[in-house]
Image (cartoon, rainbow, N blue to C red; front, side, top):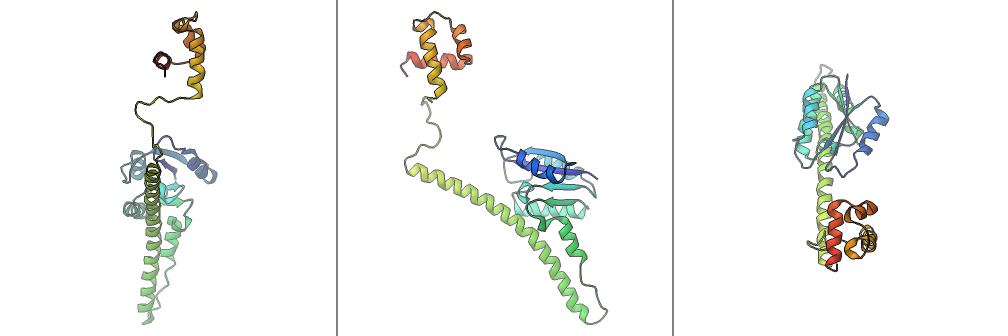
Length: 226
């Protein structure tokens, strides 16, 4: 039976290795599936491959329910689909909705007695089933809400900074001055033939370790007095 460690981040700049470590710590034999994905739908190539490939008895391990889906409705639909196929789901941060827990909730139904009391017991069993389903739905709903809240707070923070006169992002056309550029320009000014030195551009490039485009960009800035 295969165990898949399902990891996902929104951009390649985010560190996916934390999720990998968390999964391998408990499931060292897991086949790690890495996915870099932006959006809120289930159009994810790696996820869809495993979703279709997984067989009864296989296990999909997620660091959290949000790694399975950011959309509550689609997440619950996938959960039910995988559960009905006999595939195990494990959520390291939300073990209360693991499929094993859900399965036990269904298997612990109160047995019928063959008397009129069964009408009551049937109602209790249905209630327990709906309660288990509701817990799963709530987990996906909470995950989706947290993502939406994060986006909202980020947007509000950017707007607040803008209203307070702070520059958001780089200003188009504005030169970015760094310690590296300052030091490199000192070397260029001292050694480049164009500035009274004795070395050619290629020699100064080697000395500074600058890429060709960056080197000539710095020279242009120096000549224009920037």
